[in-house]
Each structure stands twice: as C-alpha cells, then as structure tokens.
Image 1 (spheres, rainbow, N blue to C red):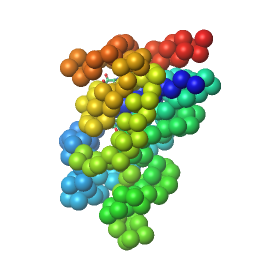
Image 2: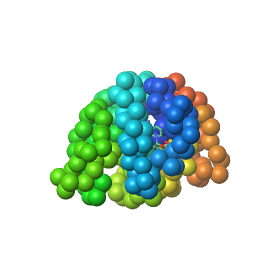
Image 3: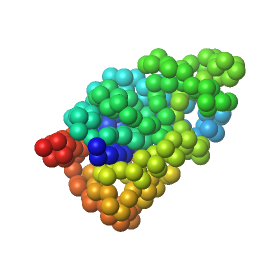
Image 4: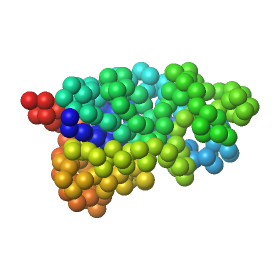
Amino acid sequence: MKKIVVFTGAGISAESGIATYRDSDGLWNSYPVDELATPHAFESNPKLVLDFYNMRKKRISLAQPNAAHLVLSDLESKYEVVIITQNIDDLHERAGSTQVIHLHGEITKAQSSIDPEIVYEWGNKPIFIGQHCELNSQLRPNVIWFGEPVPNIKIAQKYFREADIVWVIGTSLSVQPAASLLKRASYHAQKTIIGMDLNVKKKPYGYKFMRGKASSLVPSLVRQLLR
Ligand code: NAD
C-alpha cells in the first residue's frame, strides 16, 4: 500500500467554524495569543488561560467536521494514511481518520502542570482552578505552548521520510518545529501544499502549491487518488 502523510493546520478547521487564533474576536483581542499560549501566562494568570481554553473547547465541541476532514478518512480504503495535525481539535477523529498524530496536543485532554506525561481524558468538560492531578498540582489543558518541547516531532519526521505522497493543508507554516517537517519528505514523494495563501519563502523545494479552500480542493484530490 502507498503511504500518504497529510499535514494539517488551523485552515482545515476554519470552514467548520473554528477560528484561527488570529481571527479570534471579543475579549481575546486584548490578549495576544502569544501571551496566552505560554507557560509563563499560565503561571501569572491561570484563570485567564483556563477561561480562554474552556471557551475554545466549547466552540470545538459544537463544530462538525467539514468535507475536507471527511474525505481524508475515505483514503484509508486504498492507502496507508497518517494525519499529522497541528490542531488541538478532534475533527479528524470525528471524521473517521484512524491514525492521527497531534503535534500540539488535544483540547479534550487535561494534563498535570508539573508532569506533562500525566494526561487525562477530559472530554468536553471545562477545567477549573482547584482541579488537581494525582501529584496535587493544578490541571491545565493538554496543549503544547510556545517554548515547550514537541514530543511527537520525532515520529512525525519518520512518517514524512517514509511517505510516497505528502499533502499539507491549511497551515501558514509559521510555527516551528512543525513547519520544518516538510523538509523531511523524500525527493521522490509527490508533494502538494493546499491553502488560501502561501509565503513563497516558506515553500520548500519540490512542493506544488494549490490555492483554494480545503473543502473544495481536498475532495477533488481524494477522488483522483481513489479512481
Ligand atoms: P495559521 O492560523 O497560522 O494558518 C492557517 C492557514 O490556513 C493560513 O495559511 C490560511 O491562509 C489557511 N486557510 C484559512 N482558511 C482556509 C481554508 N478554508 N482552506 C485552506 N486553507 C485555509 O494556522 P497554523 O499554521 O495551524 O498555526 C497556528 C497554530 O495555532 C498551530 O500551532 C495550531 O496548533 C494552533 N491552532 C489550532 C486550531 C485548531 O485546533 N483548530 C485553531 C487555531 C490555532
């Protein structure tokens, strides 16, 4: 079976109504995301950070997978498919994809704030101040913040190296080390970036760029592969 790696970012979930952080509105405009998505932010104002992620979790729980998420799961009938996502939402899983690697964590899980390996299934419930892990430290969302290590990067690099086909969907390629994964793909792999815009300086050699919405381009690419 041919191997496909699909690398996704916030753009694939935009049409499901999950805003990219840059589009976030209301209260959060006064708090740049860089000031909320850091360990320092959590230390200095844990309630603000928990409120922010509880709000995101609520929005995500109400969203539905769109056509792009759904057709990607159809590929599994003919290909070995691994989805590597920067997203913390669970829309790939809810669309039926069975191999999903989250580089930046999962909003439906909670983790200890002193040991990142202590992780709990938390579902759609909010996390409140005073809820503790078994080591008696405050729980936080299972989300990788700026400046924290990305444990799944090694396994993601391996899948990129082994892929025959690489699709990159809905990412600005501005977050590292995730963006550098593209360079791990084989010279011989067929490599495509799908998105609304692309900073050409971020496009590695050998990738073709297709401009457009994920929900219209991805279904037609999937149909071609399944023909
Ligand atoms: P980004 O916001 O930096 O870039 C999104 C990209 O998607 C842009 O290039 C944009 O042009 C493109 N895009 C927007 N709508 C699209 C559509 N309909 N079809 C195709 N492309 C579309 O997102 P990023 O590169 O993923 O990096 C942001 C970071 O924020 C990530 O680390 C991610 O973990 C996190 N984040 C996650 C979620 C989520 O879980 N859904 C949402 C927001 C942010």
